[in-house]
Every structure is written in C-alpha cells, then in structure tokens.
Image (tube, rainbow, N blue to C red; front, side, top):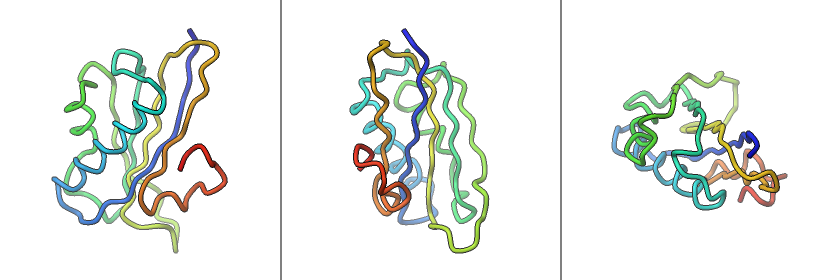
Amino acid sequence: MRLFALRGAITVDANEADAIVAATETLMREIMSRNDVRPDDAVSCIFTLTNDLDAQFPAVAARNLGFERVPLLCAREIAVPGSLPMVIRVLLHYYADEDHTARHVYLGDARSLREDLDSAQ
C-alpha cells in the first residue's frame, strides 16, 4: 500500500446549505468511484470554499458518505481577483495499491480549472 493524494473541485449554484452538501456529495462520490476509494482508505481530507460560499461546511457531506472517522478540515480559498466563483475544492489523502493511479476530478464549471488534466474531466 502507498499513500496517494488527489484533488477535486466542483461549482455550486447557490450559497445554500443543501446546495453545498449536494455538490460536495456529488464530488466525493465521483472521486470515490473513479479511484475505487472507500472512507476506510482515507487518511485526511481538506476542503476549501471560495469567499462566496459560507452556508454550510463541506465536511457535513463527507460525513454523510461515511467519512466520520477521517480528519476533515474546511478552510477559505485565497480570493484571487478574477478567479472562478462558487467553488468547493478538496484534497484527499488515501491509501491504495502501489500500482494505483490517482484520478483527479473536476466537475461543473470547475473543469476549467484543470483543462490540462484529461483524466480529471
């Protein structure tokens, strides 16, 4: 087994608790599916939100998906002028087989953040 880290991001339609939880659940489910990751494989997970999102913690969604024993952290993304608004980002650390390849996941308008990663789309 080896420690891996992967990134993901998704955009949210509204600064509402339900929208943040739903978007985060969608992102985490896609990360889990593409990488064959289960909550028991996870070491830690860091979420960031752009300044326009503050209605809920994305960690709530991760706990809903079984990450309740994983250290979860939510933080504010740096407010760079002209950057994409309404974005939830994640950095997930997890264990997988040595020959595993981490597949980053960018959904919604967040796809524009990493168009260079074909596997992330």
